[in-house]
Image (cartoon, rainbow, N blue to C red; front, top):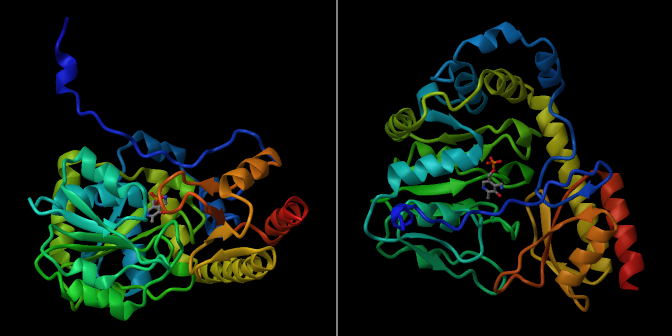
Length: 351
Ligand code: PMP
């Protein structure tokens, strides 16, 4: 009998939403953007110099970092990029969550937070949302080893006003506060203007939702220069070449096309508000989502049943079999046509 198994880092992995192989699925289960990437991205991919792939990419990711910095009016030394915000967040955990005190996050939130904590042996404590699924800011005042929450929160879609976000940051000046803004472009106000005032704040965003590039895997963190330097030290100690050449070039194009980005977000917000009205008429209730999804509960039909019926009909949404949220469906916002099909199906099924 060999004993190597006692030295394995045993983890319970994060389970991503299903990526079906069939083509004709209405896919509303992973909060992807239903619109294609910006036209400049398509052109750049077409014109890509594949000869360049022979070489390692630029480890500093300068092209992309500069484009992000320019877009937000920051210095390039205030921007860190990674392979999706998942990679950025994992690097943040490694770099900043090294206290013996627990890090804090909500009980209902992005389900990767406890997975990273368990994997990296970071102690954590969850703080229950209130009955309306809102974050109770006072819960984050006590001693802790760091704070992380999404704004808007996921999977609820609920946004916390900036004054409350600032209140949490200002009560935690001795630790790092991470605001995960994966969904901020769909109506909320970013905490980014606060990075000059608070040297313990990191704002994390992604190209996966509002910039239609989940498949390219690009995420970024913004904060003061010292924080970004520490993050880069850890990145270079782990993997110098996180971002491939294609991601650097295409990400830069996506960031530069502000008009396309704004138009896409506007369309999604419009479709979301239409979908809210229709779902309400059908007997669904939900908090006021400011993201590209709606987290809804029906007055009589159980969520699990709806989830299965929708799946059979080729409409994929997300269902979490977890305490407090096991009667909810998380429905990503697709195109107008896709949301019409969803509503038509539900009208038939529920009547
Ligand atoms: N944060 C939140 C709150 C999310 O919902 C997601 C998407 N699963 C991510 C981060 C990670 O997104 P990505 O790695 O695609 O940037």
